Length: 198
Image (cartoon, rainbow, N blue to C red; front, top):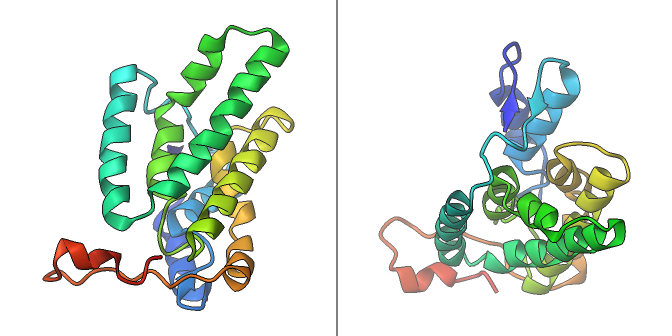
């Protein structure tokens, strides 16, 4: 998603992993803040929304793999809410402009958007602890991404929206009760992996 021949990508992410944390969680998604930092600090780096393609079979494969990961981590509602909010905004825009609905469908099939939705916004260490908080957060990120993309005409809008909205997570966690996500131990049975997630 991001190309940068001259800047090392791990440095912004690594710095965030060790320094920006609150209540046992990262404030920012390390990969997300790394992408934002690299693209902001360099004219030779950019986010390519078309890199992953938009073929239907690729979109279905990404969705299937993403749902597999998310159901194991119990974070599917974040992704589904993001797509359920972002999709109607895209279709509403197409209707408003008189564009064919295929344009909005094509935008939803973007591999970059699906990778973001299934593997970045749903990160258990950077999303709110409660399911209600995750739904609210996903809806806010979807709205911000839409505004950044179609009002400010900035590519890579979901990635920027996530970085901008990330500081809301500690506030959402304070307002809504939920347990801190904990990764299952390697020998722990699958049924016990949901412990502490609700």
